[in-house]
Length: 286
Ligand code: PSU
Ligand code: MN
Image: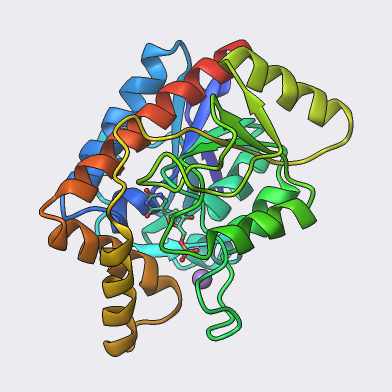
């Protein structure tokens, strides 16, 4: 039911990568390129990438490049609760951060990278939409490297929930949780770190103390500071089109990619690959 690639099983340092951003976060074809670029970045840091998804009745930890090609917009989006059904029903299933963390537990992986964590959607409790990423992170024994929480969400509320759940929120050379496309303006982190080694040491200490998941926020190198009006337009369009639940994030991302003339797309790609590189450095140290 679970297939772990030999290279992943034998590796000392592994970084888990998700497939929802591959299938649903980019225009057709480009998501696979981002996934492969992330894998290369992990390798350049001295770790082995384990891209995770459900295929042909198995939860695969360490997809091949050919297998990754099958993750297009028709793939199911799999949170933690969806893994079993996708395996039994032999669906092509793209794992979210939460779904990927569930696989990390099964495979013993301690570091993962993504673009932006899911969280509390704006307007809570209407809709009462909170990503399963948060509970999964609280339960996992994994350090997630991201550019904070996706800023189409209610980031301060998400930060509060992370605090309530006992999840350390580390800032990579910043005291503010990055706002996905924007480097500054987010809520304060619980601790600022200056290096990959310091983040690795804190994660190891957190686990020795019986703790679970940690978030490490790495700010995007090229900060986009003018996206908020576009995000508001995207959310209004989603509402007008009756888009709900798991469909909201893919809808909003593609709206932004289109309406920004590709600026958010380039930013999203770069930050994902840079997060994968940093995650690789941390895995190599751990
Ligand atoms: N980061 C990106 N693009 C994405 C995601 C993260 O740059 O598409 C995905 C992750 O898989 C995350 C999901 O778990 O968005 C959150 O979806 P939702 O808001 O529906 O929980
Ligand atoms: Mn949701």
